[in-house]
Every structure is written in structure tokens, then in C-alpha cells.
Length: 470
Image 1 (tube, rainbow, N blue to C red):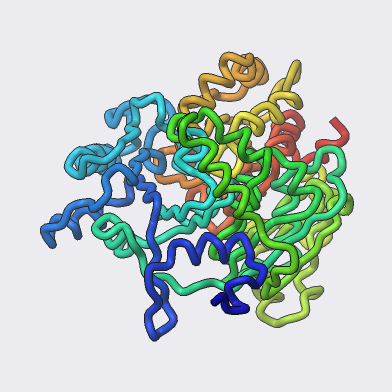
Image 2 (cartoon, one colour):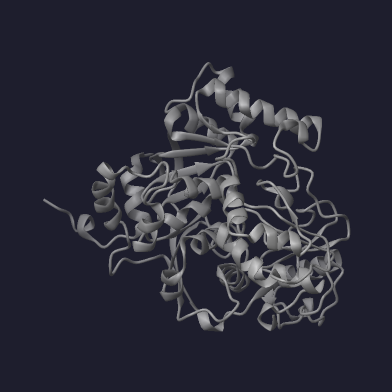
């Protein structure tokens, strides 16, 4: 006998969660089976915990270690690290990977890169999986129709030892982006517009599913950017339902299902998208045509306006908290209310990070930079060694170099600023990264978040610039 609830329409999120729920505690927490644990150099606490308790990784083949946060981008060995302490972290990571018998993409590996770029690129990320990593931007992986979220190091130790994790089930939210995006408008702009609208805490406690014509028309690379930035609205995770675009992307990748397994995988994946009539706890709709190239002015991703806009007056915000926060942001950013963003001088440009360092991002920036010269210091840090090789084969690296950009090795670089790549105190950086927090790119640094094309435009003019004019 089937219960009504067994046949009720379900969301993509609900289907994957239910398939991985082992049991539910009376407190409401679920014990989930975890398909993939992605690990980077910050994991030494979790390994120390395992060793102290005499435990070993339970399912080594489902754990992938990728060096990214601390790696130097001007060399390919621990000896090139920014300090002896960082070199020690990289070496400790290598030792822990070997101790655990884990798949390991170290600093010199052709598979190395930013974990959230490498996992989809290698076919480690697949539709219907549960994926964790001790990094908040793990939500990126949801672009392929997976449940993916960041965890802390004590949780990481639990996953390593048991391949399971206790979690509270988040509420659900659907963000539908209708119509078509205008010229020069990207997934980065969609997300900055969404976060500006709902706020940096606007999706707190929710799993977001992105839907609508704009999302359907996006490449996987653009969807990865959407899901990556979900965390900047405080969502637990972001997802896009798998479709033909997803299946074409996954086919043939290193860890993807083999030809023999493909039909079975496809049958499971085709059943994943949200059923007609399934309900979400919250719905948000955006008109894609109304979104312009965006730029941040403050110290939170929600402090974003179209490039054609002006810096708001703190007095214009409704709540006393927001007025105070805006005033504090403007003081840190050294900006005056009413200033036009288009034309604001900048000191440097960074193109990279798990948000915008994939091959399509580099193509978009190179298209603007071709036959032009950067007016300020600028660096490009590809998201993985394979992206770097592809960009060199396509002639993009040559365009960057001829424009005066530094062409680096892959890594988190100036987004995390814990690897020797920093923005100087008081310097203003047009950045394709994901966070414009106080000091995020270095003590006293001032970050303006933009898309890769907008970053390229800023590099050419030495100012924040509406890319549509170029």
C-alpha cells in the first residue's frame, strides 16, 4: 500500500536527500550517507583527530584530496610557498593523503586546481550525489544536480571515519530567472542582483534550486557560478536540475560512469528533476532582461548595484542596523554617497577563484582584452592546471600576456589571500572572486566584485567600466 506522501510530487533536493537518509534522530537531525568528501590543505585538524582516536578513512576511494588554498601561483612546489609555515602545511597535506591511502591531486599534479573547479572537470561531481568539503563554496558542485555543502573539520573527521554525517534538513527555495539576459550580463551578475535583492542572510537555512529559461540556457560553467555564490546569500546549498546540458558535460570525464554504466546512470539522473506540482518553502522570481552588469561598493556581496548606478546614501536604508553597516562600509571603502561607480579608479585586477576561473570565464575576459593593454597591474589565475593548458592551447594565455596581465599557475590565489597573493592596504581591486569582506584580499584591501568581462574592462581603463561600452 502506498501512502499519499509516497506519491506526492517531490523536489530535486527532496529526492536526493531521501535517497541518502539512513535514519532520523528524534531531535530532527538526519544521518546522511556521503558519496564524496573533497579535501584540501586545511584538513590537518581532521586527520590529527583520526590519528588520535586510532581511526582510518572508511571509504578511501570516495575521498579526493586537492591542494588549492595555500599553493603558490608562481611555482609548483612547496619550496615556492609564501612562508615556511605554509610550505609545512602543503607537505603535511601530502603526508596525510598518503597515510590515508586517498586519491591525491598534489601541487605538481596535472589534475591539481581549485577543488570546486577540479571536481566537476574530472567527473568527481555527478548528478544525484551528496558531496561535502571543508569549504563553504562547496555549494558550487550543485550545478550538476547534486547536494553539496561545506562542513567544519570535526564534521570532516566524522565523514572520513564513517562516510556519513548528521545534518538538519534545510528548507527549500526556488529562484526562477525568466526571459533572457542582455548583452554583457553573466551568471555572476544574476547572483549579485539576487543577493542585493534578498540580502546576505536572505536564503539562510534554505537549499536553493535555480530554474527558469535563463538557467536552462546557461552552460554548466555558468551554473557553477550560480551555485558557488549561493553561500553568499547564506543558503546551505544551491542546485540546478540535471538536463541534456549536464549529461553532455559529464560524458567521458575521468571519474564519470563508463560506457557500460552509462544507461543505468542516465535512467537514475533523468528521474531527479523536481516533479510538476512540487512545492517549495519559498519562491523568488527575477526577470533576466532587467539585470545589468553588477559591481559591489561595500563589504558584503549584498552591497551591489548596476554599474550604471551610484553609491547609496546610508540614510536611504530602512533599518538602523543597515544604515550603520552601510556607513561603516563606505568608511572602509573610502567612498562617498552619490559617487558614480562607472569611472571609479582602481589599482589592480584579479581574474580567478572558484567563482570565475573556468575556461569560459577566461574566454570572456580575453575577448575584451584582445589587442588592448591593461592600465593597472593585473593577474589571471586559472582554476585548474587543465584549464591553464586549455587556455594556452586556445591562445588565451597569449592575449592575457600581450595585454600586460601576469599569467599564473592554478590555485585560490588572491581570493583567499593566504598564499602570498594579496591586495595591498588601501588598494582598490576589481575582482572576479566571491567575497568583498573587510581584509578578505589582504589587510586593508578594498574589493569590488565583478564578472570576468567587467574585470577585463576595468583593467583596460584603470576604472570600473560598463563592459557594454567596449
